[in-house]
Image (tube, rainbow, N blue to C red; front, top):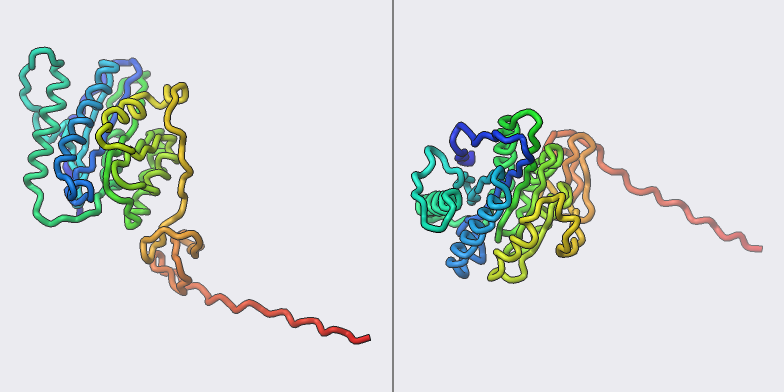
Length: 300
């Protein structure tokens, strides 16, 4: 069972009846990522860029809300607002108190998380579980809003990990749940192309971007992901790429072009199996194709 750390039991209340935007950022801080193995200092640059982007989201409107999650190989954590009581942050000259709280709380909780992790390095990150927790947090926030208030919710995933087909069903459940809840999922890929997450962006009308240069991460975040979804139609954004809608088989967890689908539970397999390993339904072996006899030529 994966460890789950949620923020304090009492979520921040939405007291204004004006239109409010809630942004949940899922930051993949797994040290097993290839780009972090090659250069561990990149994580500092990514964290600083994400914090600056988060503060820009709060600066757009005073009613805007924010949550930041750290995703690892075995657990997902809320690092802002963190668990327990909020930090006692003193005002820094020339800086808004909320910006100071976001920066110090995020960095302090992330530092505790990285220092408490064991030495076992796993390259696969639990992005699907982190997005599911983000949807639960959004549902809590939806229940706290007053009557007549409108809450626009979206999730931004910032990751450098590869796309894991072993989490295919979890991804699909998250994507269609987000679509039903009208939650937009955006993905910022830092290192590799992520076909499954690209499907989630297309399903929820979000944006997918593979950052060409990591040094300009903050510029890409502000340009592409800072505008609200209703405003994006009026902006010049990167053109959408062709979505790879291949499914992952349930037997080898690999993306396939052609496969067999169970007629009972809709499980997908790359090879025919007389028994479905998901629902244990027994199927008949496919009969060989009948060969039509060749017509004899009539000699005149």
